[in-house]
Image (cartoon, rainbow, N blue to C red; front, side, top):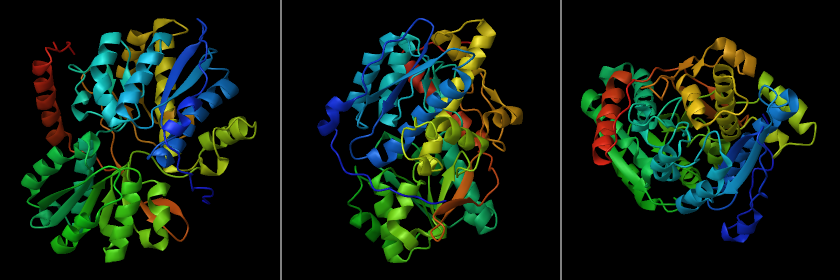
Length: 436
C-alpha cells in the first residue's frame, strides 16, 4: 500500500473556528447523524482520517443504497479540536436535531456526555474508548463501547506477551512498562495492568506523559535505567511518534514495543521511517484497503468526486476505524427500522437496536468485510466480547501486517472489575440499575 500526502499543515483550532460545516436542515423523513470531529488542533493528523471515514460511509450509503431502507442519512460535522468543553458545546448544539446516536470521538468528551445523553435519551457509542465500566448495561443503558474496552485490550496484550515468552507462567519476574497519555484515556488501562501484574507476577512500571507528548526525555531515561522486557503504550497523536523515535534512538527492540489501538496508525510510525520497523500494535479490525467495502467506496464515492479526503488513504487504520463506527450505526438503524416498523428510529428504538447487535459472518460479508469475528451485544454486556488482533509495521513496504490470531480477552478478570466500578458509579450518582 502506498501512502502519500501524509503531512498535515499545523492549524490552530481558533484559526479555523469559523470553518465548521454549514448547518443543515433535517426533514421529518431523514435520519440525522452528527459528527463530533477534530480536523484542527494538536490531534488533527489523527482526527482527519477518522472524520473522513465517518463522512465517506454516510455518502456511500446514500449514493449506493439511496439511504437505509430508502431513508436518507443527513450528516453534519461539528469541530471540537479534541477539546472536551467544545465537544460538550457541539452536543448541546446538535441534540435538538434528534440524532439517532452520538459518537463523542474522545474519552474526555465521553465522560462529560454520559449523564447528558442518558437524560436526553440518546445512545452514546464510544467504540473502543471512553469509560470501560460503561460495558455494564444495567447501570449504563445508554452507553455502548463495543467491540472491546481498554481493560479487555490490556488482557489481550498481556496474553500476546505471554505467548511470545513461552506461556503465561513465564511472565513471572518480567518487566513491563506502560507509557501512557496523562489523561482519562491514558489511565484507563492501569487498573487492569495492575491486576494482571499481581496475577502473573510481572513487574509493572507506570510512566505518564503529559499532553501533547512532545517532551519525553525523562520517560526514556527511566526506560534506559529500567531495561523493560516489554513496553506497552497508550498514546495519542505526536506522543506516539516521539516515543517510537526515542525507542529507535535507544536501540530498543521494536518487536517488544506494543501500542494500543490508538497508538497503531500510519501517522505514528511513518515519521520514524526504518526506525519503526517491527513495531507492534493491537487492533480490533484488520488493516488495509483490499476489501469489497473499499471497492464500493472507490466506485460510489471517490470515482464520483464525493470523497472526503484522498482515495489513496482509505486503507489507513484510522480511516477504517471511522468507517467501522458508522457501519455499526447504520446496522443499528436498519435493525430498529425492521423491528419497530419505522423509517426514522427514535433514541429508545436505537438503544434497543444497539443492545441487540449480533454480527455474524453473513453480516460482515454483506457489508464487505468478510473475516471479521462474530460480535454479540446484550442488555447487560455493551462490550460484546470481541477478541483483539495484533499487527506489525513493515517499514520497507509501508504497511501493517497481521501477526496473530484473534486473541480472546480475559472476561473472567475484567468483568468483575467492570461490575464493581459500575456499582460504585451507581451508588455515587443515585442510579437505579435497570433489570436485564
